Amino acid sequence: MSKYIAVAGKGGVGKTTFTALLLRQMVRHKKGTSILAVDADPNANLGEALGLDVTSTISELLEQSKDPKAIPQGMPKNVFIEYKLQQSLVESNDIDLLVMGGPQGAGCYCYPNDILRKHLQDIGENYDFVAVDSEAGLEHISRRTIPRVEVMFVISDSSARGIRSAGRVHDLIRGLKSAVQTVYLIVTKTSEGSMESLREEIERTGLTVIGDIPLDPLVVEYDLAGKPLFDLPDDAVSVQAVESILNRAGIFN
Image (cartoon, rainbow, N blue to C red):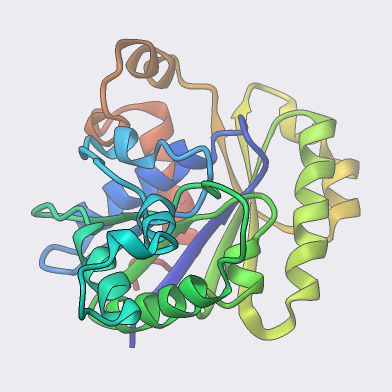
């Protein structure tokens, strides 16, 4: 059975950075393991962080299905959607990627979402690991578009406001009941003394801290240069921090 790992948090806290480095370490530790990455954040940029070229999103393809003229004559709508979903998969030697994207227009997506849910359940079971870069609202998990989550990492930056936002994400997760099994908090962009100063705020969230990721100048440098974070060197501060976190969480077991 596939193992589903999700990453959640508000924008700007380093969620996609962590997801990219999570995938980086999984590729290095799990040689021969099949990995599917799902970018479920409407502000989709996981592909850039992984160095993968994304030409279309699932939401764009589903929008096409709402136009009867786009469906070839004689082809059932569900077959057309499934065909388009297969086209949306970005394949590489190490990781395959699905990018969901945001809503493209008004109207009901109930039927396409039902097809998408079944597609992800079917395709997900072909992989050993499925890693999901989630949106803060967790809509794809609450609607069971993503069928289940064994481990969720909630990301916050090293600010009181960020920790409180992570606490609200935790409240959403608890409302999903059995959809998420294990939840951890990760604090990013930390400096000396950050964790101690945030201790009381963290305790109020009820979240278990699995580790922190210090502010890494190399991440800033790679972002500015448009270089994939997947290519960060092994001795980068952020890479080493993510390695420790994943070991503590038992991801490589």
